[in-house]
Amino acid sequence: MGQDNLKVHRRYMTISYIFLFLALFTIISALISYFLARKVAMSEHAEVWIHAQALWVMRSVVIFLVLAAFAALWFIPLIFFYWDSMLWVKACTVIGVIFSAISWLYLLNAWFKGFNKYLISKAVF
Image 1 (spheres, rainbow, N blue to C red):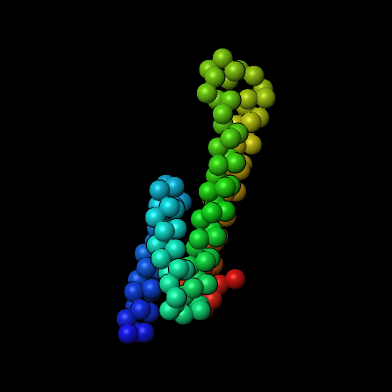
Image 2: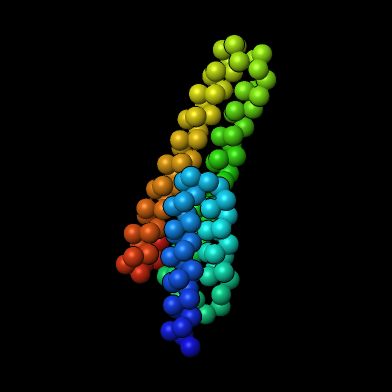
């Protein structure tokens, strides 16, 4: 029974890491990854290292979504067509691009670090 649970948890975490990588392209993949990792994190019989992996994925997705939402706020002045000629709107756009790059690089780093530890069956911190 315990071996079957480990296989199921490993399958959920593998799919979760695949969707975490795809979250670099769309936020919906991040939500799918979060809920798959949540299934493992809420399990009572998960091994410690795979439980830590699930918490790592959940934490990374939440931080990424917060960073992406903060980056999106800087693009709000672009909605108004007549403001586009003002310098502060262009500055907000540049700041938004910088924060978007930071959030994207954060998720890429979290995926790389977590997936490397997952392949060797270690807990990620």
